[in-house]
Amino acid sequence: MSAMNDFFAMLYENVCYIDTFQFSQNMYDSGAYVSIGLVMLLSSLFLELFYYFFLSSYGSFYKKIYWFLWMAFIMIINFFVAYSFSLSAIDPEATFLEYFTFSMVNVLWTMIFCFVFSIAFKFKSIKASRTPF
Amino acid sequence: MAKLYVFGIGGTGSRVIKSLAMLLATGIDIADYEIVPIIIDPDEANGDVTRTIDILKNYQHIRNSLSFTNADDNKFFKTKISDITQNFRLVLSDIKNERFKDYIEYGSLDESNKALISLLFSEDNLNADMEVGFKGNPNIGSVVLNQFKQSQDFKDFASSFTQDDRIFIISSIFGGTGAAGFPLLLKNIRNADHGLSTWKYLQDAPVGAITMLPYFGVSPLDGGSIDKSTFISKTKAALSYYEENVSGNNSLNALYYLGDNVTKDYPNHEGASSQKNDAHFLEIAAALSIVDFAKTPDTALANEMGKAQNPIYKEFGIKDGVPSLIFENLGFATQLILKKNLTQYQLFSMYLNSKIKEDLDQSWIKNLGIQTFMTQPFFSSHLKTFNQYFTEWLNEMAHNQRSFAPFNLTANDSNLFEMVKGVKPHVGFLEKGTNFQRFNYHLSKEEKNLKNNDALEQRFMNLFHNTTENLVSEKYRF
Image 1 (tube, each protein chain N blue to C red):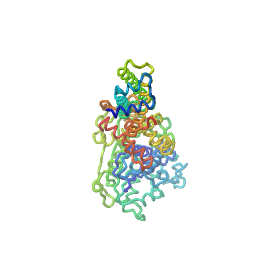
Image 2: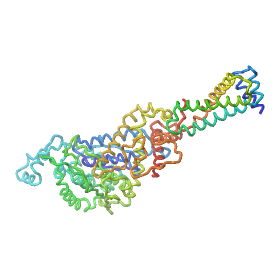
Image 3: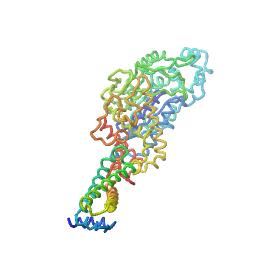
Image 4: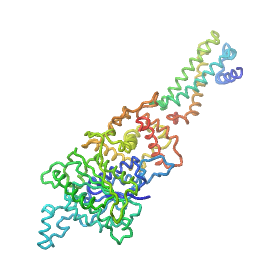
C-alpha cells in the first residue's frame, strides 16, 4: 500500500507539488493518492479496452473524433473523481484552487495513460487499428 | 489443364457466353476446365458480340493478375478463359460488303442452275447484304457457313485440340446464323480433315450443344426481314432437320433444349451495333448447361467412330412458373449452384460500385493502401468495367420477360442485407455494425488474416471473397 502511495505521489507531485496548507502532504498522509490513482489507471485501461474492442465496431465510432470524445469523457470522469475524493479526504483544509489544480493534474495523467493504452490496444482492434493514427 | 471449347453462334451464342463469363466470375465451379470461347457471327459490329468480347477481355485481365493455388482463398474469376482466335472470333472470309448472290456467283451460273437457286432462295435472299449476318435466314447461313473448314481460325482450333478436351456449341434455332451454323459446325468437327494430326481426337471428342428454342420476339417492322411470326415454323423445320442429322445420327453426346412461352419483343434490328438485346434468364440456364456438360463424367460421353454411345438429352425446368423469378422459384439443384456465388459477387460489386470511395478512412483500406490501388488499371479499368457489366446484366435480366430478379438492386446503406429477395437476413444480438458498417467490420476483421507476401490484387480479391462468404453465411445461411 505504501509502495502504491509512493508511486502515485511521484506521478502527481512531480507534475505539480502543492504545498499551500500542506495539500500534497495531507493527500499523501490520507492515502487518497492510491484510490484516485487506481481509479484513474483502471478506468483508463478498461474504458480504452471497451472502446477498441467493442464501441469502435459500431457505426462510425472508429473515427478519430469519437476517440477524442471518448478520451474527453474518461478525463471528465477522472476530474470529478479526483475532486470529490480529495475533498472528502482532506476537507476543509484546502482551497478550491488547490482541489482544482490537483484534479487537472489527474486529468493530465488520465490523458497520458489513455494515449498509452490506445497505442497498445489499437493493433488488435478490428475497426480502430488506425485510430488515432 | 483440359480445355472446353465453347462455340457461340450468332447473337444468342454471344449472350450465353456473356452469362457464362458472369457465372465464372462469381466462382461457379466448372470441373477445372479452361474455357476457350469462340464466337461465330458474320456480323462484325453486332452489339451483343462486341459487348461479350469486352467482358471476356476484362475477365482475362483480371484473372491474369491472380493466382489460384490451394493456399489462395479467392474463387472469383477462378476459371481460366483463353483465346485461340483474335478477339475470340472465328473469322469468316469473303462475306464483307457482299450480297448473297455475289457470294454464290449467281451471275456466272447457267439458266438451269439459276432456276434451281430461285427455288431455294427468294429475291430478297439473293440480294441480302451479309455484312450484318443472315437476318433470320438459315437457308443463306447454311451455304455461307459451310466454309468453316477453310477458315484459318477453325484450323487453329482443330490443331490445338487434344484428347482430354471437350466441345460445346451454343445456338438458337429460330434465327439465321445459329440454326444454320450448329449442324454445319458439328459436321465439320466430326468429319475433321484427315490431314490434321488431331482428326481422330475431334472425331471422338465429347461434344455437347444447347439449342435455344424461341424465348423472345421482335417488334413488327414494315419492310424488316426478321418476323417473329416465323419463329415457330422455323423452329419446327430445324428440329425436324436435327432429328435426322444431329440427334438422329448420334453426332452429339449431350443435347440440351431450352425455351419459354413467356416472351418479350425486342426492338427489331437486323444487326450491327444496334443489335444489343437485353440479357435473359434463359441465357443463365444455357450457361448452366455448359457447367452440367463439363461435370458429366467421361464414361457418359464415350464415342466410337464419331458416334455417341449413350447420347444424353436434357431440358431445364423451374419450380414455379412465375413471371418474375427469384432464387426460391428455381429448382433445388439450380439454387445450390447459383445463389451463394451470385449473392457473394453482387455484394462485392455493390461495395465497389457504391461504397468504397466513401470509406477511405477505414482501417483495412489504409492498411492495404487501397487508395493508390484504386488508380491502377486492375481496379480502375478492368474490375470496374467488369462490375459495371455485371450490374447491367442483372438489371437487364430483372427487366426482361420472364424476368430474373433475385436481388433488390436498389438496396442501399439502409437496407443492404434485404438485397436477396425472399430471404430474411439474420441479425445477431448486439451485432457490430449494420449494413455497410457490418460489411466494413468483416473486411477489417478479415484483413488481419491476409498473407503479406501476396500481391495486392491477390490480397484484395482474397479479402472480398472471404468477407462476402462470411456475410452470406451469417446473413442468409447459404
